[in-house]
Figure 1 (cartoon, rainbow over the protein chains, first blue to last red):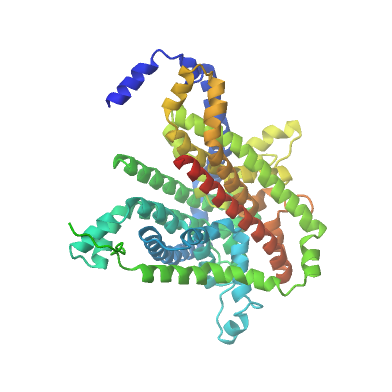
Figure 2: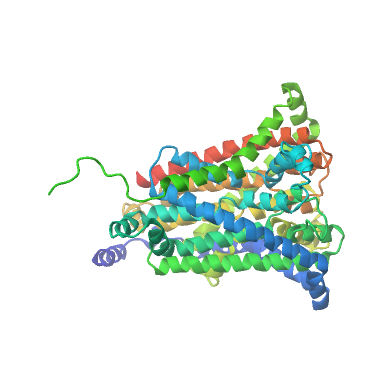
Length: 288
Length: 278
């Protein structure tokens, strides 16, 4: 405290020009930043809702309650309901191993976890076509057992799991590394079991980071387009997720309906941003 | 006081279980399927592989994909530093809202971004209508690809530069000022060199994301072979013709490019950590 006071006293005599910009430059930089963000961020966002409601509220409601739209919503929710828990369990396991223990090859493992982010979504779809497609490794076996993965729901789920693979792990690893192992060790020394330690000590410490990771994972799972598009086969009412439904409506020049469905996904994205801001504020309030 | 002479092994349980599960799950979901691409590619001999991956239409798609990704990353680097600077250093109304909204391109599904940008930049759209009298066409041209890539890769540089700028100690600038440095000298000699690893990391992340992008681009690009067709779209086109080998060969080229970039990003992050601790 006294250091800070003396520092601010000491700076009073300094030429002000050298530690900040003149007001005109400041206004110019803020202006440039806002113009760029308006042009590339706020205007596209506004366009989604404008186009969605352009033909009136009736058309909007009709588009999102259409049977094909409802089946797309169901499939999208189903994919997220499978992909998120799988990647949640993986994320917690991976973060426990990486953050609480030292072992050789750790940084390689962290890089490998990021791999799905570096891969084009189209390739994420392609790899499962090569594995499970009619000409794929397991294709003949699947055909013999009358199982369908590609152009069916399991393929869509797999592609979704792949593209959302890193989200929870990436949020938790730095968080748990920062928290160290002292609290867990103390609990164990006092006689808690491994599970008790995890549920009562670790989980409460990571809950907000975990929530944020889950929200990111869910938003991406519901919004994924490229990877799902490759494995889906685009069968209306059967293998159409919400983003694919948007594409079909758009390609049929049914713009109002396409944007109506797109606005649902946009609302989801906005909810994600609210949760992110909320979690970030909690972190600041807790002093870290 | 007696202390054990051996360093104590951690008392935490679950190492074998969690690491084992991590490796198993990653192997099944990521590593084995990815290796399928490389195994499939071995069905081609070198001449076939070369002929597919250097066909004129494919070369044109590399030029567009990598060129547009590079320009988009450069534009976002300049804009990103300006935006991060405004967000960290200045106060203005609506700043918290703007800060939260910067992540929108990460949150918004790419197909939604694609149709929204197409509606805006089409000749009858809000922005396309303004550009039409200047005879600038964005939608359904390579410029459209650039606009889509600028949108989806916008947050990277902002989000890598912002924390470094926040951590920059004002004392350093004050010391330089008290020693007689001008504002420009402080920016060029002190602030920008400190930001360099973060800027480069953000640039590389933006570039890597852009070369693989598919959803937002295909709506606005027009997808004309040799003109506005991106490489990921070519992979899809080959798959739709059941040309699995062709799709795989191009995918191998894209994957190698992605892996090189991932390696570069890791090196850059290691470099910036060294700088921060040193």
